[in-house]
View (cartoon, rainbow, N blue to C red):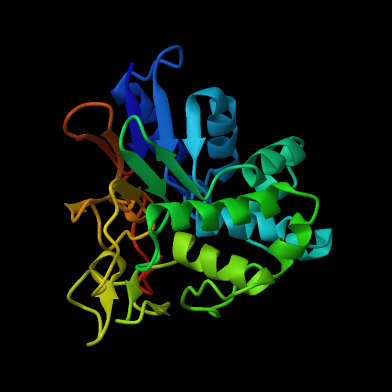
Length: 283
């Protein structure tokens, strides 16, 4: 029995198929952890969702910002949905869209496995959070997304404020702050405020910004953290952080990391030749 964490798929369905073949994935025994951004930009988001949904008993998913954006768009009127890109439209207007979107809305923001000693999240944890605080913040969002008032949250989902976490936050602002930390964060200032513009590799940021896991005073957590979201960071291991978004959608690789042994093991497949980063960059 093996457990594999897989980086941002973003609709790169052929590469996901090839990766599972390379892993010799056995659904009768093995488990898959997906660290978010299952959809958008890769061209085959519908096929990707159908594949992962079909493996839901063998999988754990933490939602990424692109997944949440899809869920937010699904709350709009059909004429507004029809104006999004063709890849997302293929999901929104699919015959099985209600089942896929309901399933996606019920996924996690953070997954912790005490026995394995690993925690998975899409982007990161607020520098001030302990693991217990992060779990509580994620659960608050998860409960709202899965509950009867999910439309209210999804209609007020994104915004750059609040850019930092405070236990005094309430209501939608509290939920949005948690979402920003868990699904959008790369760099923060010394006070833990997210800079939403900086996306390059460490060393390219302006003075006063730190990778979220290097902010001075960051809480120590007795767990290893798996994350994605930051393709410019690429594969990274240090300070208890294991980043595995290796930019498949931009022509890089789709990476899996086996996490049930003493040391993590990496397995990757190269992106299909037609994929490349546009001149304007991407996230």
